[in-house]
Length: 99
Image (cartoon, rainbow, N blue to C red; front, side, top):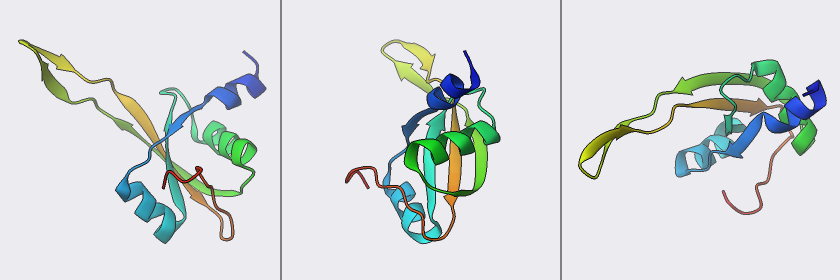
């Protein structure tokens, strides 16, 4: 896989919730689920290329899956990686009315 293809597959989905909508309005930040092995530079390039915006900063964190009971047995939700993308002033991402 070359670098162009890798950048197009780094972002998995936007993480849309009430809290992320507040962050988008107040701090110009958007939260995405990303590949577990993605780095900040790849995430920045992917957001700038897909949404045609300027990114000021990228923060990442690994979210551990919760232990849950599934029927009679115990199970575990999958671990995932979250990227908090801060956009420069004057730039915004519109997810088509999902916010």
